[in-house]
Image 1: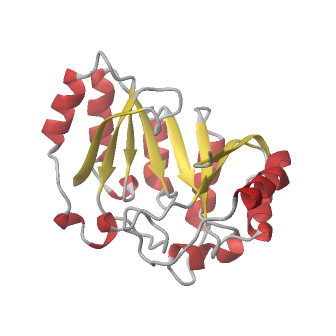
Image 2: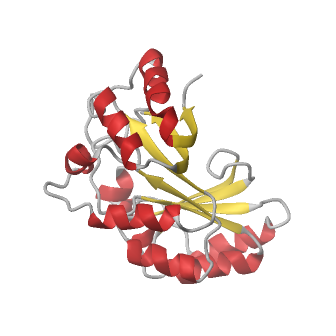
Length: 231
């Protein structure tokens, strides 16, 4: 397992919990607007942490922290993920997983072994523009559909979320996402932020007015719709 980022305290990554965030290297998608592109293209060049030092730090902070968010990269690509999560839960911490939904077999394994307390899945775009948005031509959505169904039926808290980029998302795309995920609980529209480390420079965030229009258009399809990253 390659750990290439470790935020010891955050109030942002795990809703309603004081948590630590762990970033694993490597991803199988190539989203042009990815803000962690160094974890895709050159993970070995990024700072690294051993599993033991991360677990030791979590143990030392177990009286402060409530949970851990495991992000990436794409965490489900690591075959050691179940063992790592079990070690975190043995410390007494809840686990939130961030995933792109491309590995439903790993997701099913984690659910069946009661290793997850919260899952956040990125919905990259409408079905028609998914392959374009993840940078993989002719990508089959079978794995994405399977992961969506698993998450919806899991019985544990979850969210779907879309990072909205002016060049990749239209009003029609956002409405199509709402129709696709109809009946889901929590959905978040996240405003694109250029971290200075994205794969394709020159992309832009939608306006505040556009984001509010998007939220209004898909509100009927979810229990809760919120916008992240807007003042």
